[in-house]
Length: 93
Image (tube, rainbow, N blue to C red; front, side, top):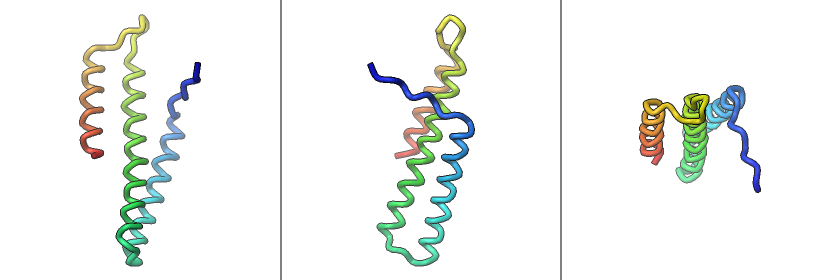
């Protein structure tokens, strides 16, 4: 049996966001320096993927918080979380 990775902590999420912020500044610099379009698009895809991962971790954390003591999920919170997840995945395409 494999081990399940634990969800990222608040500090780890902030590190991911700071890394994405740095990548985005790099994209701005690339545009300012007239870098080839393909290179800029690769970096934009990396920033998008990093932000998507943060969003998914936040949604997952919220759903885990909603779990009740008996192991069942809060129905309203689950529906809201699923709607958010679907909206997030549509936006990330």
